Length: 355
Ligand code: NAP
Ligand code: ZN
Image (cartoon, rainbow, N blue to C red; front, side):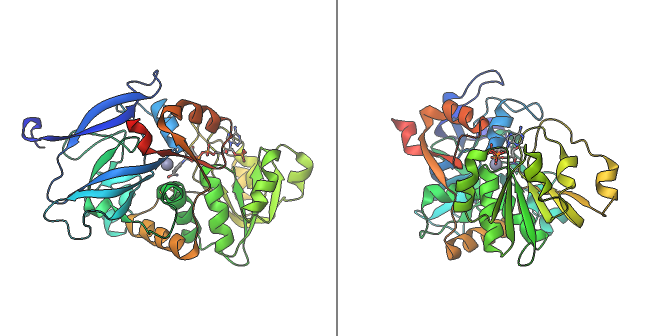
């Protein structure tokens, strides 16, 4: 561990929660001076993921405060360390949910750096130098070059930001399970992750049904390319899709009854959890034993696959549907996200941090 006194720092302006009971508020802090393998990025946009809200409210576990959330980062390289080979000043880049890992363990070798036991998440975590790390609701960030992704100039940069978490978190399981032509895919919950799952599912050739609590999203779901739309509280609508799906991608952020959804799978169907509600999942063994069903999970995606996803999006003109916000309105954005009132991702225009 480096001694703190040896580290000269980069001034940074962010929005932080000082503890789990406070709202986000402006906070000036310092980041480490970029080392020889680091890049300094001026942040242009940062997506607002539901995980940011879970984290600042300590929904899952005791967090590292003060906390600057944000792991859907797009920006421009401001400077590079002298050992950096992949980037130069001015490059457009992205940073997702992780900023470091050992790159030597089995998970790292298998290109699943997000599961490295000594990996470092973008925020709410302690870096490998022993100091807390801070996320993308800020004007800059220092990141080891291996954890920085190339972003195409072809797409709207603000709409690319959510790809760094919502994009890869849905792309990865759909690729893992080889979802595509001939498959019936249900996307449960049409929020930030859900709308990306619909876009990828359609692009990969699957027949996509949105399972939603919000009748008001019916037309919007179709506009995203979904073939069908089912309101989950409506028993009559649900009964039309019993035993019909090969895959369900579950993006729901709050407590919900998994047994109901497992009954919508065909035999050998797979229910993939990516949403992370506070409460443990409760599953009747009968729901998976009858029909040899699989209850699976998926966490973000590795570096190589994240780059693959960004390149795929650039080639296929896929971005997130976003509402660009001033960082001063972040509390309203969180309130609206909780109510499902966003089509489909808030993205912070980081210019607004200086105004
Ligand atoms: P989001 O934009 O808020 O979307 C969640 C959607 O879930 C809502 O739009 C809503 O869709 C549905 N929903 C909300 N409350 C519900 C309830 N009580 N019952 C049924 N459905 C409900 O959130 P997000 O950013 O997509 O994130 C979704 C979840 O994934 C969060 O828990 C987040 O922490 C987690 N996450 C996981 C990973 C990972 O690596 N696995 C990565 C990022 C995020 P409808 O209106 O259509 O019902
Ligand atoms: Zn996220």
